[in-house]
Length: 236
Image 1 (cartoon, one colour):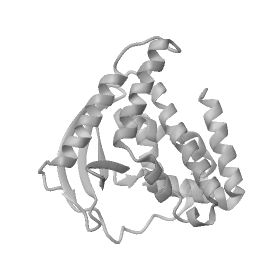
Image 2: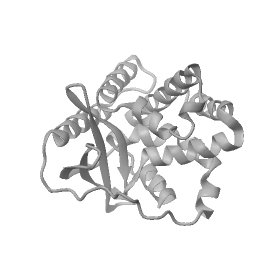
Image 3: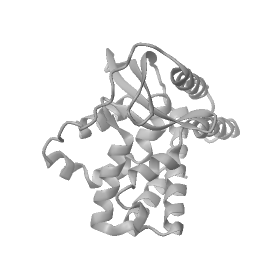
């Protein structure tokens, strides 16, 4: 399930999940083989509640963010131009307003977070933000054709707002649908997302598996080296 979700999300690149999925895609090769051999994961102890079919404040927030970013990604500008840089800055601003990358990063590093110094924590979060945000430039250069169907909204036992959606797109010319759920939490007077789940598997879970395996093998410095290599390869 974990490997399949990453592959599908990599094939179906759209909206908010584009930068998230590709932000660390290059690092996944270091753990893909081990993950593929791992036994199937046990069912979640506390599965996400079923969507009610109703919509509310969470759906409005997700829809506004998706619509804004989708409109920006569809604008045609020359690669490397001043216009592209200005457009990328607008996308980054929109992403920062909706997605709490720091919260995503902390939750993904929960097994190692307290072992890091404050300087290491700051270094990790800064690099994670840069990797995710920089990858939206790739979105500006892609042809993204998809429609988002908002299917429901609910609240889980921890108070998170879950907005469920279906992405209708095409794969090899044929209609294809993938489920994407947004997990939001109250941040001051607004809702912000800290996880995005594709086919039921969240990015926080994917990232945690990736980070833990790299740190276990190469340490925190090894993780930073791989992330910096990925950043350099993307032309940042």
